[in-house]
Length: 350
Image (cartoon, rainbow, N blue to C red; front, side, top):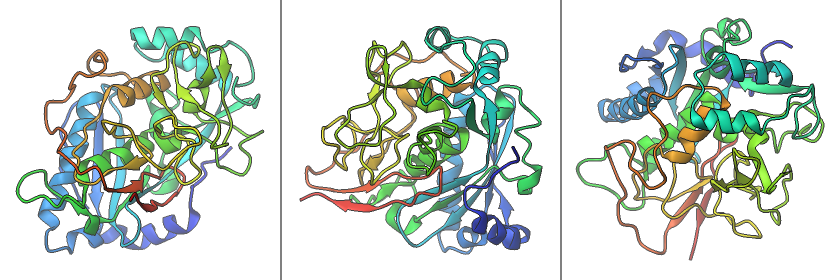
């Protein structure tokens, strides 16, 4: 199957503006994220601060992943919602994906546990289709370089749009308690470009029941030994790598957010995030700085990436920068969509 753009119209628009884009500086290491800022960002009065904030988010993700691949992301400003990612992907037989996970990555303890609970069979265990849809960076990371080639998309893996007017673009200086952390939102969307979060689940697509699934769907459980592949808000599902025995974090079940993102596990599902917040929460809080955490790192690890360090124990601050800011009990929430061109929907709690 050829490469399929999530939103075809956006790629045509991007082609028009490519000549006016400027490159973001990124840290060098294993993973390199080649960030490109569009004119909608470079023309802003605070463009330098915005670009610096995105660069800091890029550095967090680069520091976490050891795979020597380059991911090309275009960053744009937008005037609605909070953030959105449009990402290219391709299909791979489940059986080949399993082979690649076993042979083409450095196996961590989490990888070994996850592989023990992924059955060796032709069809994927989530809905029985023979294929899995993976983002281009993930395909390259597991050795599927031809399927992960982004030449068809003009060298772009993902376009991330951010509503910068609703964000604190820097974590220093005066902070608006009603605005959202730029680094957290950018990290949320970059995770989806890598293949977890919204891009990690095929739920909400038109052919989710019988079509190819995505990698996070393989780790979605409702009970020990029982996978969950339902969009019902009355279903409680969670991320588990040991066959459902351990609930690492709940998946979102609200139709207002991405099913590949985290939820708080309430039943029926509500448009609220976790306490404390996590980067991949489907619904985020303003006034809070959030860094990559244990659950995001485990997800990146088991879907096919190599981490630069062992996954920390829950509660450890894997990245020293940043932290949580105090927020009021009454606050806005905004859905953290993306991955398949989902937009963010602003929510308010009384």
